[in-house]
Amino acid sequence: MNPVIVVHGGGSSSISKERKECVRQGIMRAATVGYNILKEGGSAVDAVEGAVIVLENDPEFNAGCGSVLNVNGDVEMDASIMDGKDLSTGAVSAVRCIANPIKLARLVMDKTPHCFLTDQGAAKFAAAMGIPQIPGEQLVTERNIKRLEKEKREKGAQKPDCKKNLGTVGAVALDCKGNVAYATSTGGIVNKMFGRVGDSPCVGSGGYADNNIGAISTTGHGESILKVNLARLALFHVEQGKTLEEAANLSLGYMKSRLKGLGGVILVDKTGGWVVKWTSTSMPWAAAKEGKLYSGIDVGETTTTDLA
Image (tube, rainbow, N blue to C red; front, side):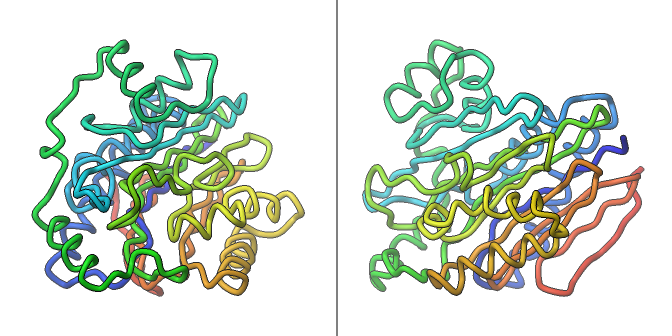
């Protein structure tokens, strides 16, 4: 089986020219790291975790360092991961003061009988697993302080068709053994209520992976994604015999027509086919397969480069 990985940096309103190149380089770097893990025989789960860690460590993306701020000016992060081989999954929500929530989600999957830990329970588990606490301010960027101030002035965070703040990061992969996996991580929505949790840690909404079908990671307006179970909805269409492109278009189209919710998806199927689709203005993405790296940000724009 030829391994493949696809990553996204979140559906969003248009990305400024000054940021575009940094965002493009970040997303390509994440896909390359994940693809190298696959090429060296690593599992799909290892690859999606590795790719998402790169994005969590990059302040350009709304996950880990660079997460948006809640109403109190704090970072609360959500993440989930799933192995399509046996449907094992791990998720965390409302976590603070750790650099990589996706690592914690992976540990929930691997080291506990549970699927989902939140807030204080997740923090205690992180400490027990030796994940270091970092000062919360290390996750806060100047750009996000300004975004929160702007959002409070405009009071826009609660609009149901909220077209801003759609950032999440995610990855899907197929490894050489035919296993698929997904990982999704986010800081959520700017100016969100304290304790608000979106779709990203919720299996079936923020992502899903099943070796019999494929894997998906979603991004967009979390409340809308939760209401339609976007990840599982898209894979249902694949199960029904639709192409990946049709499945993506149908599920995103339903969310938009029913709820005015905007977002995006990345999908890989059990044969190594892949697709990226979004209804938001832009969605940074990159995919690696058979020694080629594909990437884009805006609709209709794809660049292809050779991987060394």
